[in-house]
Amino acid sequence: MKKILVAFVVLSLLLAVSACSINNKTLAITLYYTNEDNSQILTETREIKAAQGQSIPRLALEELLKGPQTKGLKSTIPEGTKLLNVEVKNNIATVNLSNDFTNFPGMMAESLAVISVVNTVTSLEGIEKAHILIDGEELTAPSGNPYGLLESYDIKQINQDISNKKETITLYFPDEQGMYVVPEQREVVKSEPLEVIVIKELMRGPETPGLASPAIPKEAKLLSVQVKDEIAYVNFSKELIEKHIGGSTGEMMTIIPIVNSLTELPGIKKVQFLVEGNKEQTLAGHVIFDEPFERYEEWIKR
Image (cartoon, rainbow, N blue to C red; front, top):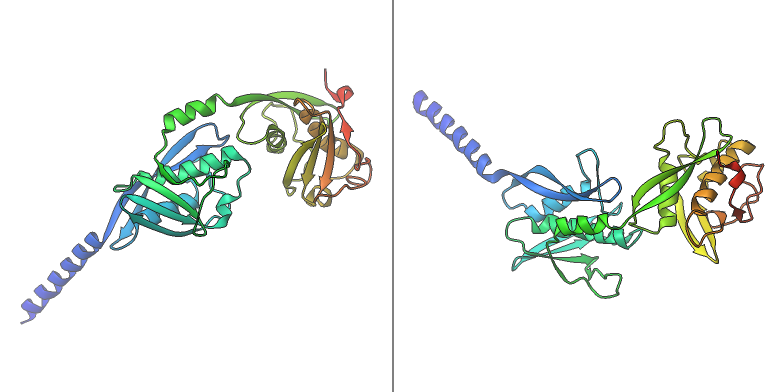
C-alpha cells in the first residue's frame, strides 16, 4: 500500500511539473527603441514568460513601456504612458494607450513612438496590422487625420531617411577657467526644432576635453523655446534661479553659452530668458536678466 501511495505522489508531482511547463512558456519578443540621439531605430530581443491565457501582445507592449535594458538604447514612448487595453481580432491589434502617449516634443518624436508600438506588436505571430487608440479614440496624425490601420514599417528605409536629416550645430561651452567660451561642433538629428536641440545638447555637456558644462543647474528643466521676430524665448523651470551657483561669472557662464549657441542658428539674433513663463530681474542677483541678450563675440576664445 505504501509503495502504491509513493508511486501516486511521484506521478502527481511529475504531472504538476508537466502542467507548469505547458501553462508557462518562454517567448523571445522583439522591442523597438532608438539610440541616444534618435539617429537609428534599433531592436532589443527580450525573453518573457507567458502563463496560459495571458495576452502575448499585452505582455510585449508592457515590456516596451518599461524601456530598454540594453545600454545605448532609448525609449521613444512619452513618459507616463500607460497601456489601457490590447485586443486582437482578424490579425489586427487594437492598442489603447493613455493620453500621456500624445506628449510628443515634436513630429519626429511622434513618428518614432508610433513606429515602436506598431513594429513591436506586428512582429508577433498572427498580427499583421496595428490600430492605435488614445483613451478609446483614434490617434490623430499631425495632418489632422487618424492614423488608421498601420502595417510594419521598413526600418532599414526609415534609418536611411533619418540619416539624411542630420545637421551640424555649433555649441559654446566655457573653458576650464570660466573666462571664455569655446565653440564645439556637433552632428544631431533634427528630431525636433533646432533651437530646442541646441539647449538640450548644451545641457548634456561638452564632448571636447578641457571644456566645462554651462552653469545650468542639473535640477532645471527646459520648458519651451519659441522664436518670434528673431528673438528666441527660452523658458526654464524655477530651478534655474533657485539652484543656481550664483556669482557674476557663474551667471555669465549660464547666459553666454546659450545666447551664442542659439544665435548661430539662422533667424535668431537675440535671446530672452523666461522662468516659468515670466521675466526675472536678475538670474542670481547680479546680471540684469529681464531684457533680450545679443551675441557675445568678445567672450569667444580665439
